[in-house]
Image (tube, rainbow, N blue to C red; front, top):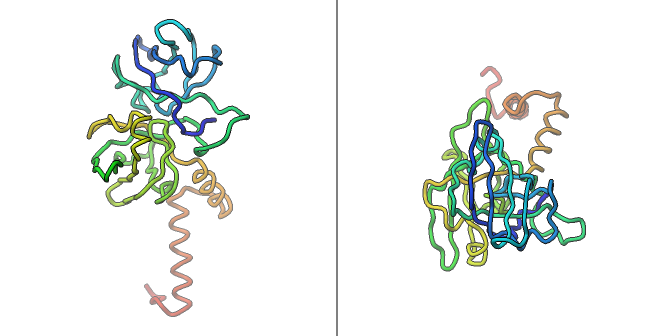
Length: 240
């Protein structure tokens, strides 16, 4: 479990690709390796990855992680190049203050940066989801203004959601811009998205309580209930 509060920016120093995935070496990582062990989890741009090798002292500290093809397909990590910076966060310790929101570091999908508008020292950034597919349905139902979202591993507050355009927006204050990679990503770049898992649990519980079925079936059920209520109050034509 993670909090979405980025601890440090590491740098991609090596990428070794084969048919099954790739090995990523991340350098300049000494500040988060003081208590590291082989097998530990580190969120890299919001993706929970397992440390396979590390050295906390040489070359500013480095560690290696293995990325399976599934991870490369679902995240932006397959597009990273040597020299790119990455957001890093160690798994949350039980003894630390909880400052972000519950983040699993299981990336749901990617979104694309579509606009960046300065607002004083802050920056308003808007993103767009890809067209939904049967295998990857829309995540917009889990997004609400002032709700949480994880972008490249950073816990951020939504400032706007537009279902029709498949877009959502956040604001980065100057401090946040200096601490995460998002402020450096250009228009058209991909970002890793994890929606708040609380919304997923709520949806599943409601669907189960109403007799199961998919979210589209649930939507149809709600529409029918609303129509019946309106018909009883004489607000709609019952014959329609």
